[in-house]
Length: 208
Image (cartoon, rainbow, N blue to C red; front, side, top):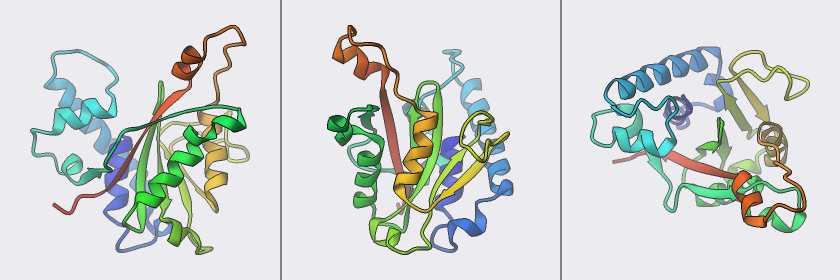
């Protein structure tokens, strides 16, 4: 669903601002498109896996004539892996650092970034750094899952899109969905990193 959301968003960026087309209609269409895509892939798979990673879907669609996946161009050196941490000394691999790098690498007005950390997957929409200097630019969190106990004061009870004025405010929302897993002082550092690792997949519209 995050991939169909990405497709339905980035195809519009050259024609309209995100605020004008990211609405309940787009969310409903993207969810239905995602369910249809997943059903098609599951019916043609013998693995029986209920949940597919982004890589699984990209690979499964690579030999198919699928306009959604073929229209998405993944940034070089992706997926990009980060680590959630409450330590100020380890933020170079944190959410804000990696999303900032996506902005720097972008050549379009907006970039669609799928973020995954089992069992959660969300989509964020990032303006470029130059566009972000415009007070009207928005950082957007789009999620097909309800969060009735999170994201105050909204507490979304269904699929939703939250518009943020800054990257920092977007990251604050993401940290509610992807909290740091504290395992205690006696747990080896590598295991701490494994439990707190996340992947990001930055996409733009394919021009090929």
